[in-house]
Image (cartoon, rainbow, N blue to C red; front, side, top):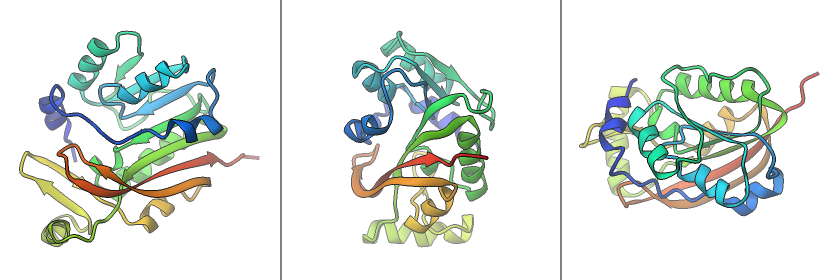
Length: 213
């Protein structure tokens, strides 16, 4: 499922309000470590890290317009376009990988599994994975659209927005399955504001890549 055109179209207007848990991140990741933000958008999280003293930062996104916006806003950041399914990096290259609000727009389970596998590949042993995204909601508006689109996509929690994008909210069990090869350090449920100013259940997670022998 290819949604690059949508993100290119809205790159200059969308703000991503999902907060980054800096105080938790800093417990596990040090300022000199090599960090990759996958689906970095216009680089807001990387810039927050930069402003907090982190310097070895790289961002990837498949939207050229998002990258262009980020480079205008934050010319000091290393933001790179990546249209491929694979992360353009050798194995064991990063101390930490960040994935914020990316699973929600990559709705197919197989695509999500492949992405997590790639993240594991480029993480060093004992590297830190920071993941934040949206969980299933129980309000009438969301329940109605989950039910409406389940037959079309075969996944409960997937829905379409009128503006032309397909998104997914996840069960906690699904997230735990996706991250089963990591050692769970933090899993905290919360409530996030969405890019369209609604509220949604969400979570943030930190895991450690298990040492390979």
